[in-house]
Image (tube, rainbow, N blue to C red; front, side):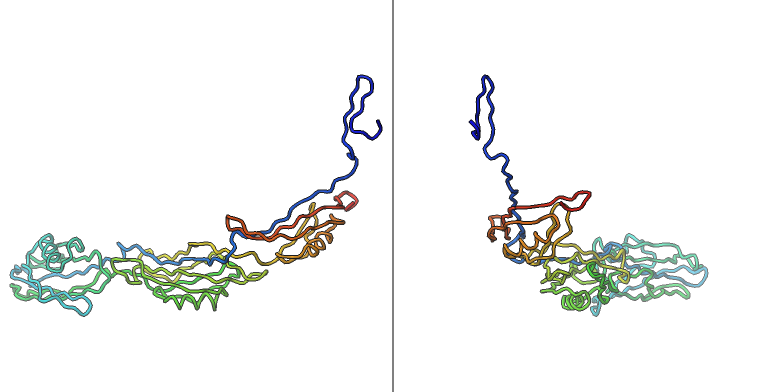
Length: 353
């Protein structure tokens, strides 16, 4: 029964496989793909922030005094102004008014309930009686307010009231920051804390070498939307140039805040949506630890793929069947080739054999 796959000799059964000595070449499928079949722009956001509670505090100090030994009585007046708007009339206070009474009167008169505090202390530098120093702190302000004091009808020899002094100014955002492209280590020009969207777009394109579709800018503190309290720039990119062509997946921009001032001022950047592009560019191949082949196009022909593989020391001959272009239900798109390895080598102590 020579040549058959089954033979019987006495009580011994031998089972074999026809052609088992015939070598079968390995077959592999090479696939290159992108996770999207259409270009999707990358979106990054740069934003500034600060400690608003600490930044929006402003304190004024003033006091009354008279000649030594005199007792101050009567009234004084405070006149308030915000930007170019002056409140209708001065607010009168008794010379000995308590801090709590002054705070309540100011909150109601200026419509600032819960937004200011008042403190009253002795004035160690004044030798008259009923002489005080007041501190008025605005707790939620951008620094637009100011006020003056008038001795009005203070009684007592030499009785005066000092002009309010701003002992603590607001500490809002100001200054500038810079953007860094980590791909080429280029740094942008300084960008003002209140830079427009077009300013940021120009800096990224001209200084960092990244093409931008549009930059949208907006102030972030809705209660008082001014850039001094925080600003955000939403950057929608086109692409950036790499060593292998353009790529819509842009490097995460870095920011530097060395010249940005304000109470705990900060600038940060993050990627809101990572860019994705259709498959493009080129790739190289290696087999069994060989050196890489030359780069070939992502959509190369079967002949070009076979040539690249056969240039490797580890491959003598391959057969590459037709290229297949695909787009699947998940949105991935790319190309695949079926490769039959007809003759290959392996690395030994004596080289590739």
